[in-house]
Image 1 (tube, rainbow, N blue to C red):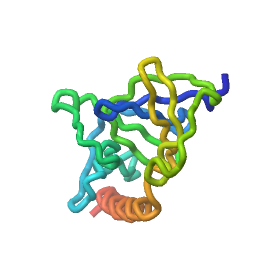
Image 2 (cartoon, one colour):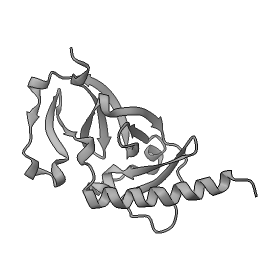
Image 3 (cartoon, rainbow, N blue to C red):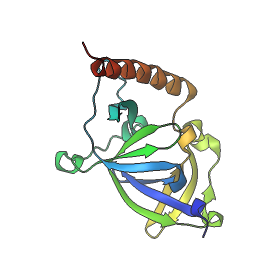
Length: 164
């Protein structure tokens, strides 16, 4: 089977979504994030990844899902790091890696999701997961705002690395 047919399954509340495995750099247990004042609600904060400020989006909040993980379950959340752009997605849980032939995907019209971010339905044994297009999760103006915030966070991190 083609590696492009491999998908990472994620849980957001009671919903399942998926990402192409080839778009994922790594999956992290919930790391310590720093959250400067005045971040948008959909941003969980920034991850210090070897001196690089990586923006982390709370995917459930970004999508307007009202379900939230219970306090105990929130301890076990994951951050999925995308390769390009280097961006973290905070999810309730990464729970599986599946192979589904491309011919079994059910493409979705772009108009059914904001910015066409849900590209297809991925069939599962107990239903389906929406396959997300990583490059369309953010609108252009949201991506520009995140980039600007990332530059400020990077400057702040760099200031701590410089000797006084």
